[in-house]
Length: 66
Image (cartoon, rainbow, N blue to C red; front, side):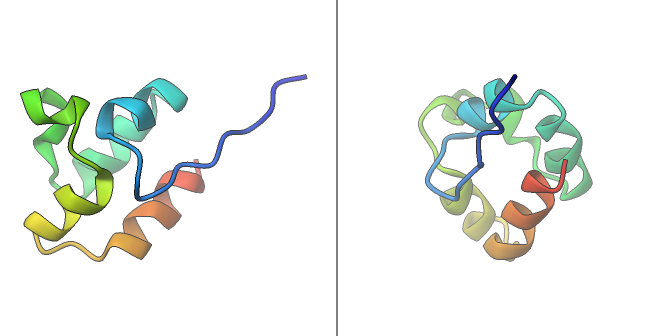
């Protein structure tokens, strides 16, 4: 049985995608091209969302709804 890992605002974009590859679809929906950026490995989801004026809670909720 596979345990579901919760994606948090403190995870990097890379960690979120490694947790669930479909996360890339959510980032795309929010127009976050961060997955192709070198900062994806160390920038947190919260930092990226705030830099782009995106509501962090809504983004994390959508990521975990996958």
